[in-house]
Amino acid sequence: MRKYVIMGVQGSGKGTQAALLAADLDLTHISVGDIFRWHVQHHTKIGAQVRRIMAAGDLVDDDLVESVVRERLGQHDWNYGFVVDGFPRNQRQAEFFLESYDIDAVIHLDLPDTEVRRRVLARRLCSRCGMDYNLIAHRPEVEGRCDVCGGELVSREDDTEQALAARLRAYHAKTDPVLDLFRRKEFVVTVDAQPDKATVQWMIREQLQLPARDDAEQRPASDQ
Ligand code: AMP
Image (cartoon, rainbow, N blue to C red):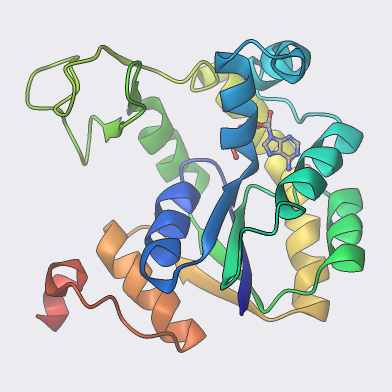
């Protein structure tokens, strides 16, 4: 069983890299941000509690985050392991996590703030099927429309200059110290998140000594 945490500032590709890793290793990808977005979209009680906080780029209350994580991991649908993305984000969450679960490695995606800004402000999401786009690296064929379902492309509510500034501040103040804590206790691998996604995935696997993806197309250009 493999249990990983993936950490990195907004826009560093955590969700993408976690999904690539999870896919062929049969790991369960658990994104706390996605769970909260699901609640907002489905107008649940939790959704009502977190919507404004998320839109402002602030962190959701630790008790709520912990109960969501506990509930999600308690489903035990992760026979081969999991990749947790977006958690822990502060010292208290890290302590809760370390007390409750043992992890094999922490994957840290490293991206400078200037690049974060460039990427995040170009990020778009299909309002119908949820497919991710980026106006720099992954443009839709028809402007403003999803290639898959034709749905309208929108920005995430928290991908604004103001919310991004708040999220970056929160990340450096609260999440950087978590990385230091993990560096003292756990196996942390740091990967440069600037190359294209296939290369980043390849570097993660190399550092964790995991098998490369068998799809040749997914290997970095320099390796083909
Ligand atoms: P993400 O998709 O990981 O960027 O998360 C989106 C938003 O969900 C964050 O800006 C927070 O408002 C909230 N969130 C996600 N994970 C956490 C967490 N571990 N602690 C507190 N808030 C979180």
